[in-house]
Image (tube, rainbow, N blue to C red; front, side, top):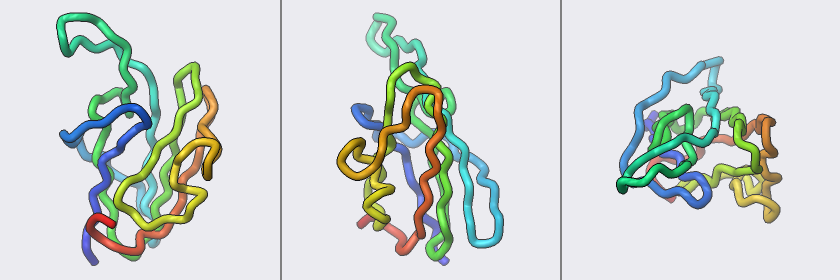
Length: 125
């Protein structure tokens, strides 16, 4: 099986640098990750700003999967506003695509959303 790396791209936040890898929980053919989205004070330009962090890191962590397995990703929104995770480069069910109000419900403040989809291919789609 080929390994698949996914770097999180949160709505309105782009990063070309991968964060640290997380260690998944594995149950049979299911690979499970737990993520939390929160705000974090950062200073990239000499001025303090609030940014979106995943598991308290910017950029977010890299998630590693294997083709043919099932991805389950619990995303806890610790922010005071709704958010969403939009996955790039994957074939996945439309409901899991992460575009809020278009095909996926947003993750409301202080709630957790469970993304679940089969990993049908490796590489970028």
